[in-house]
Amino acid sequence: MTQPERIDFLINYLLNEKDELKSINIPPEDAEKKRLLRSLMNIRPPRTVSEEFLEVQDAYLQEELKGKGVVSVSDLSPVQPGIYLWQGDITRLSADAIVNAANSAMLGCFVPCHGCIDNAIHSAAGVELRLECARIMEKQKAEEPAGRAKITKAYNLPCRYVLHTVGPIIYSEVTQKDCRLLSDCYRSCLELADKQRLKSIAFCCISTGEFHFPNREAAEIAIQTVREFQEEHESCPEVVFNVFKDQDYEIYRRLLE
Image (cartoon, rainbow, N blue to C red; front, side, top):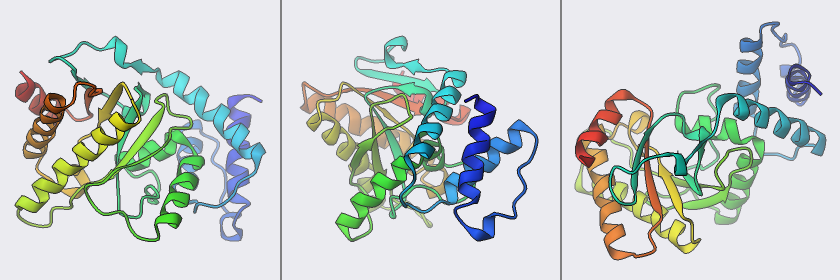
């Protein structure tokens, strides 16, 4: 099956799952098809799916990943012992684990093609990631509080695992509690990575963006927490601070230098 055949199969499968979606016309342009497929995957609730769908989806996503290109931690140069700074798409990064800035429902972003990292990670991983998260949350029977971390498989991502953490949401002024919870996010992920004996972990800029934590203050907390953990643990995994925006790259570069 070719890549165009795969995307047509996946779109038709998802459209036929719900009667109200069957009237949607499949656009002829490749870019619009990709946007439609991602939208359908984003809004899809966590429910069982056929093995044929998973086989085609995985082949499709792996081919898309090949087109984007994979970046290995081993290809990066450290800015400090055990610490790296890399600007780019975290879904391309081959590390033992990448960190997802999740929301309290822990099921990924349901807004079609939203620009948040939660949406990007779930879209690149495939529908299996939401299904695993749903099993975790069903067992937990409560929303995920801020400052903790959960681990899942990575599915079609080039990393081995995804660590999911919920950061604090800033509504007005940043409080001491907000700072403590953000630090807890980083420490919880590091503790979980250390427990799993992972060698490398890539952090996104937790709680910035949609959760409105000031970028520089968030970076200061992230770096301080990582440094403290490294001092306390000889087996601490290597840490990649992954940034996407130029603004965040400059903030981390100056702080790490």
